[in-house]
Amino acid sequence: MQIDVIPNIGEARTDEFLHKTVIVIDVFRATSTMIAALGNGCTSVVPVETVLQAKDMQKPGDLLGGERFCKKIPGFDLGNSPVEYSPSAVQGKRVILTTTNGTRGIQKAVRGEKVLAGALINGSACAKAAIDFKRDVIILCAGTQDVFSLEDGLCAGLITSEIAGLIGSKQITVNDFGLAMWNCYLHAKDNMLDVLQACANGKRLCKLGFQEDLAYCAKVNILPHVPVLDREQMVLLPF
Amino acid sequence: MQIDVIPNIGEARTDEFLHKTVIVIDVFRATSTMIAALGNGCTSVVPVETVLQAKDMQKPGDLLGGERFCKKIPGFDLGNSPVEYSPSAVQGKRVILTTTNGTRGIQKAVRGEKVLAGALINGSACAKAAIDFKRDVIILCAGTQDVFSLEDGLCAGLITSEIAGLIGSKQITVNDFGLAMWNCYLHAKDNMLDVLQACANGKRLCKLGFQEDLAYCAKVNILPHVPVLDREQMVLLPF
Image (cartoon, rainbow over the protein chains, first blue to last red):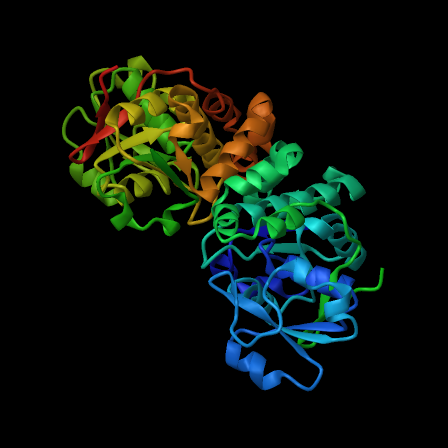
C-alpha cells in the first residue's frame, strides 16, 4: 500500500486522488467536529464553502454550524467546537457546516474513490477503514490558509503509524513527507497536549478561550467513528 | 529568535528573506559537497544554474563540478559526490558547481542578509554561525523538484535543535513546519543512516551506486566549516 501525505490543501493535485482513499485531516477543528457530531447521533454533516451556501441549503430541522476567524458565525446554531455537538444538540439532525480549511479540504478531495474525515480522536478507526478499502491512501492535511499545521501533520503520522501497526511496516511505502510526519508523531505522542499547545493554531485557540476544544482534539483513538463522503454529505461508516 | 523552516524551494517567498540569515540545505548532495570542497582547501564554490553558465564562467585553473539526474555532467572535472572533492583534487582551486536543486536553492536565497550552506555534516557549526549573526533565521530545504525531501527536513530539525541547545528553547520561536522537523529529527537521530536509506533520494542514490556518498552525508556535526555567500560565490566563514 502506498501512503502519500500532503502538507496542505494548496499542495494537493486532485488528479492523483483517483482510485484512492483520501483521508482529510483538520484536527483543529472541522474534522474533529464532524466525528463528534456523527458519533453523537447527527444524521449527516454537509460541508459547504460559504456562509451563503449554508443558509441556502438549510431545511426545517437542519442545524447551521461553522466558524470564521475561529469564531461562531452570527445567526448560526453552532460554532466549530466539537464539544458543542452533544447528543442533545445534534441527535437526529442534519448539520450544514462551513469552516475555513476543513470543509475546503473535503471539497478538494471529492475525486477520491472514498473520502474519509480523520482526526486524532479517530486515528485508529481511520487506519482500519483505509485498510479495508484496499486502495492506496492519500492523507490530506488541511493546514491553515495553505500553510502546514503541526496538529494535522501529527495526525497524519498517527494514521500512518496505525496502518503500519496493523498490516506491518513492510507492507507500506510512504512518501518523504509522510515519513517525516510518522517520525514526528512517534517523538511527540507521549507529550501530545504540550506539543499541540505550542503550535500556531494551539496558541491561537488557547488565546481565544478554546482550551476545552484543544484538550478534546488532542485525545488519541478515543472514538470508532469514521465520517465518509456519500455524494455531498459526510455520513458515518458502519463500524 | 524566529526560526522558519521552508519545505522546498517552490514554497519560498524571497521577500521574507530580507534582513534574515538564510541557511540553504541540500543534504543529498550539493551543500554537503560545498562544505567538503571548502573544508578541503578549495578557494570558493560558484553555484550556477545551467551547464552553459558553468562552462562560460570557467577560467584557467577552475574546476567544473555538478550533476544532472544524479550523475556527473559529461566533460566536467567532478560530479556531485562530496567524497570526490578531496584536498588533492580541489586545494587552491575555484569550483564552478551546477546541480539540480541545491544551486537553485542558493540562487533563491540571495536576498537574505547572510546566506549559508548547511548539511548534516556541519549542522552544529551552522547553528553557531546563525546565532552569531543575531538575525531571525530561515532554513530553506532545497527538496527535489519542488517536493519535500526527508534528508533536508532532518537537517533543518538538527540545526533547530542545535540552536535551541545553545541559546535555550525559550529563546526561539519556530514555525509549525520547523516544529515538525525538530520532533522528526529527535526521533530519527539515533538511527540516521537507516532513516536516510529509506527515503526517496536515499533509495535513488543507493540504486545508482552512491552508497559512499549517503554514508558520508549522513554523518552529523563532523565539520566546523560553514560556506557563506560572498557576492556570487560561496567562501568559508572564518571559524
